[in-house]
Length: 349
Image 1 (cartoon, rainbow, N blue to C red):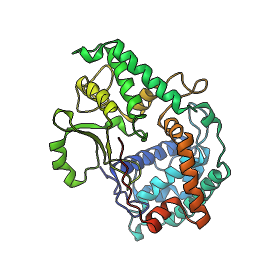
Image 2: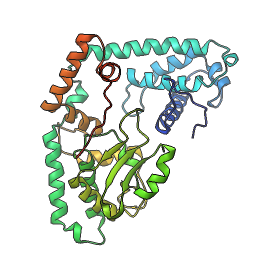
Image 3: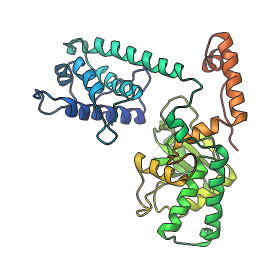
């Protein structure tokens, strides 16, 4: 729900996921302002409103972003996090009428965002090819991920889950961990997008797809003859929405659906009729791959995606495409979209 009349910072239509992220960013900023505003607070309560933002002054906001320390880690905000919070403010500010900007707020914001982006991209440029401390800590190989998936598959087979009508909490947890490992390794791994994927019959899906729904579905035809994922709510627009499910993954998902007791593919372990939020699903991924990687590593979807792209055969393709595009003075995306004019359609079998 776009309650703050947020506007896209890139001119496209805002996805439901972007609206959710920007709302979260604005709420976080309010929390930061409350925490860092040491002097007598002239606002009493921080509300998301045009007049309040102008009253705060942009300098106060940037100062708060620089002063803020996480209560648990005692660390400040990263460059990337500051940029994302200011981008959320921009999405809100774009909804203002010109006469509502009484303190040059828009201009100051645009200047600061440009500076933040320049610093951000400079940081990326300086660290190309370098692994950060966090990268090294949470690094995992693709082979390790496959090995864990197969171990979980063996555990489910040993527990004879296929032949049971009801599962204990421990059995269901094992099956769900297998399903998590499977959706991230049998097809190219997506972001943390499976947390809210809904199960829907193909006939029903055919009716709603005409509206181009901004939801994520597991679409199943009669007798499981066909099964595919539909990603209508993903971080970046314009990417492939339909991903066909290979046979081995379909078998695992079919068993998982049987025991979910919910419209969601993934549920809470002790409440199988309820879906999970982002943080909970992230913890489930960590738990599924616990013990892999370095000491005290937390393997999440970022680590999994890095492991996928780091495989020699994938790295070779990515580097070659980049090398060709670089020699022509443009990006790989520009080469595909404007010069080669390739219509991408990836078949996953």
